[in-house]
Length: 96
Image (cartoon, rainbow, N blue to C red; front, side, top):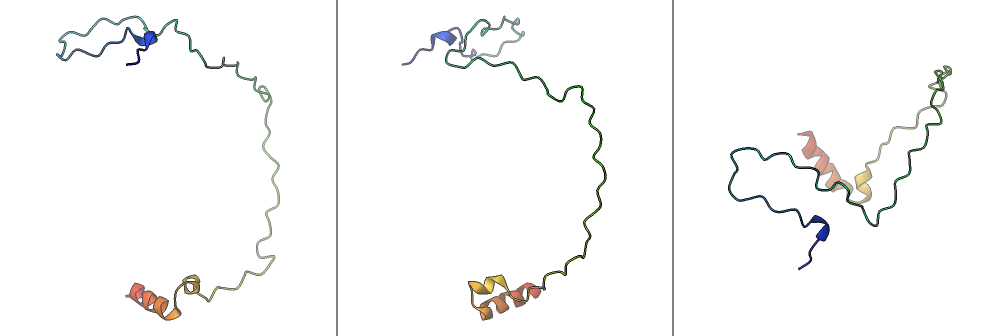
Protein backbone atom coordinates (compact mmCIF):
# COMPACT_ATOMS: atom_id res chain seq x y z
CA UNK A 1 0.00 0.00 0.00
CA UNK A 2 1.35 3.43 -0.98
CA UNK A 3 0.93 6.12 1.63
CA UNK A 4 0.90 9.73 0.46
CA UNK A 5 2.27 11.62 3.44
CA UNK A 6 1.56 15.00 1.90
CA UNK A 7 -2.18 14.30 1.99
CA UNK A 8 -2.43 12.02 5.00
CA UNK A 9 -4.68 14.58 6.71
CA UNK A 10 -7.46 13.87 4.13
CA UNK A 11 -10.09 11.43 5.31
CA UNK A 12 -13.17 10.11 3.49
CA UNK A 13 -16.49 11.72 4.35
CA UNK A 14 -18.49 9.99 7.09
CA UNK A 15 -21.24 7.65 5.90
CA UNK A 16 -23.98 9.39 7.91
CA UNK A 17 -25.18 12.78 6.73
CA UNK A 18 -24.39 15.67 9.04
CA UNK A 19 -27.36 17.94 9.80
CA UNK A 20 -25.36 21.13 10.47
CA UNK A 21 -22.75 22.36 8.02
CA UNK A 22 -19.21 21.84 9.18
CA UNK A 23 -17.20 24.97 10.00
CA UNK A 24 -14.97 26.12 7.17
CA UNK A 25 -11.47 24.76 7.76
CA UNK A 26 -8.27 26.45 6.71
CA UNK A 27 -6.84 25.44 3.34
CA UNK A 28 -5.15 22.05 3.97
CA UNK A 29 -2.84 22.64 1.00
CA UNK A 30 -1.51 26.00 2.16
CA UNK A 31 2.26 25.93 2.40
CA UNK A 32 2.69 22.74 0.36
CA UNK A 33 5.44 22.88 -2.17
CA UNK A 34 4.99 21.37 -5.60
CA UNK A 35 8.15 19.29 -5.93
CA UNK A 36 9.22 18.56 -9.47
CA UNK A 37 7.38 21.41 -11.13
CA UNK A 38 9.30 24.22 -12.76
CA UNK A 39 8.85 27.69 -11.27
CA UNK A 40 6.42 29.82 -13.22
CA UNK A 41 7.97 32.79 -14.97
CA UNK A 42 6.23 36.13 -14.83
CA UNK A 43 4.17 36.78 -17.94
CA UNK A 44 5.96 38.82 -20.56
CA UNK A 45 4.96 42.43 -20.90
CA UNK A 46 2.60 43.15 -23.78
CA UNK A 47 4.73 44.73 -26.54
CA UNK A 48 1.60 46.41 -27.95
CA UNK A 49 0.47 47.99 -24.69
CA UNK A 50 -0.23 51.69 -25.16
CA UNK A 51 -0.07 51.53 -28.96
CA UNK A 52 -3.04 52.86 -30.84
CA UNK A 53 -3.98 50.46 -33.60
CA UNK A 54 -5.38 52.34 -36.60
CA UNK A 55 -7.79 50.46 -38.83
CA UNK A 56 -6.27 49.04 -41.99
CA UNK A 57 -6.59 51.17 -45.08
CA UNK A 58 -9.32 49.94 -47.40
CA UNK A 59 -8.07 47.97 -50.34
CA UNK A 60 -9.62 47.56 -53.75
CA UNK A 61 -11.64 44.36 -53.99
CA UNK A 62 -10.32 41.64 -56.25
CA UNK A 63 -12.07 41.88 -59.56
CA UNK A 64 -14.54 39.04 -59.69
CA UNK A 65 -14.95 37.53 -63.08
CA UNK A 66 -11.46 38.38 -64.26
CA UNK A 67 -10.95 34.75 -65.22
CA UNK A 68 -13.55 32.40 -66.64
CA UNK A 69 -15.14 29.86 -64.31
CA UNK A 70 -14.00 26.24 -64.59
CA UNK A 71 -16.25 23.90 -66.57
CA UNK A 72 -19.09 22.21 -64.73
CA UNK A 73 -18.17 18.61 -63.83
CA UNK A 74 -20.14 16.08 -65.81
CA UNK A 75 -18.64 12.92 -64.34
CA UNK A 76 -19.55 11.29 -61.04
CA UNK A 77 -16.61 10.76 -58.69
CA UNK A 78 -18.05 7.55 -57.24
CA UNK A 79 -17.91 5.95 -60.68
CA UNK A 80 -14.15 5.79 -60.29
CA UNK A 81 -14.71 3.15 -57.61
CA UNK A 82 -18.09 1.61 -58.51
CA UNK A 83 -19.65 0.62 -61.82
CA UNK A 84 -21.55 3.38 -63.63
CA UNK A 85 -24.66 1.18 -63.84
CA UNK A 86 -24.67 0.58 -60.06
CA UNK A 87 -24.24 4.30 -59.43
CA UNK A 88 -27.04 5.17 -61.89
CA UNK A 89 -29.36 2.82 -59.99
CA UNK A 90 -28.35 4.43 -56.70
CA UNK A 91 -29.00 7.94 -58.08
CA UNK A 92 -32.40 6.81 -59.33
CA UNK A 93 -33.26 5.60 -55.81
CA UNK A 94 -32.26 8.95 -54.35
CA UNK A 95 -34.48 10.82 -56.80
CA UNK A 96 -37.61 8.89 -55.73
